Length: 343
Image (tube, rainbow, N blue to C red; front, top):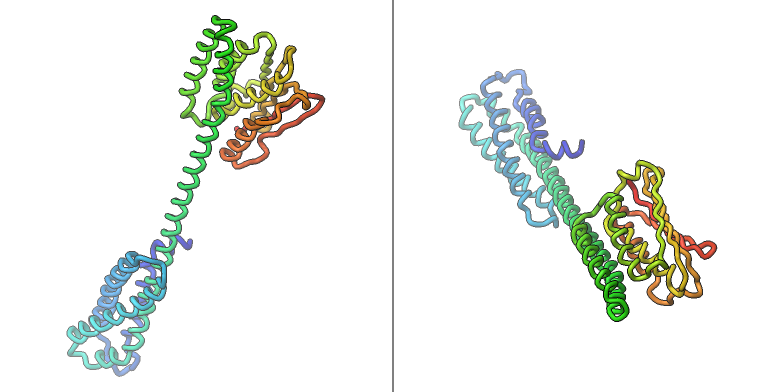
């Protein structure tokens, strides 16, 4: 409702002015002869000049360069314009109805009321225009702030995505370097798989949300590279639950760093076979991803652990404004990472 009042601020004083001018122009003495033509001229002139004055006042206030003393400026300006309207209308009335001495006397008797009411009406327009201008300026400031926040959020998301990829790339290149001397064919195979994987990464880089099926295909390409590095030592079991899973979506580059983290924790210091379990399902309109891998706390690398998970946690917070979407559990030498994605 307040916005509607601001929108039609110029129209609100006009009926008030018409009513007041009607009272002002009615003769208060029964001995004065009423001229309906004089009444119409009186009210019409006031309305015409008041409308023009309110338009000029509104235009001037809208172009006032600052918010400092805006109300005082509107009050003073409405007073000056009301005085000009009063003088001009008075001159016109004297010229138009010069022959009606009784009505001219009535105009003289109501001069103060006419001026005050004209000033009040223009003051209304001025103050409402100031409020409307401040509201629009505040809206623009808020929109600029939101654009800045959005740009900062997108920049941080991009930075996080770019930071997560090199860790895997460095490991893969180191493995390729080692395989070149030990097994040239495996090194060549790994280069081909790495090329395919990076090609998929480039295609997905502009996508904010992708289907879970595309994400799993991406994970399979990643695991194909890891299988070359670790051979039969690495076993990954992916369990899908429910038909609703086919329609689920997930932010791009969320799952791969978690799988990479699980492989690092599971295989570090372990010379035997390691099995990693990934379970996916929809519950309460949330995509639940549970990833379990074995780990030995005494054999974990002292530096660099958990960097990928911290990045994932930050990305989820930026995307969904929630801090409860990533959970970590450690029980019976099993490291569990639980991710929840709102659908």
